[in-house]
Image 1: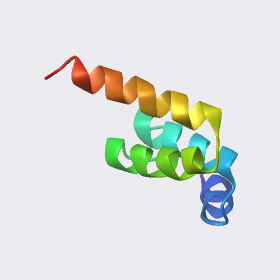
Image 2: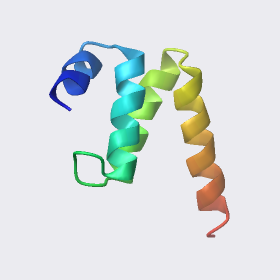
Image 3: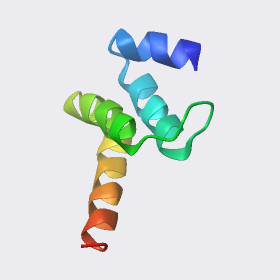
Length: 66
């Protein structure tokens, strides 16, 4: 997690996406959808397709619960 966070803070979109996944799944960190969305949004703004995909999945899942 240390290196993902370090790279994510420096703007690496792949690390941002992976950090979002870690937060979403609680892999090495406390589960936090808010943090996951934060990192995926940063990565998606840089054009990361995986991050956009994760954002869409979460959006669709939340629409099903309303």
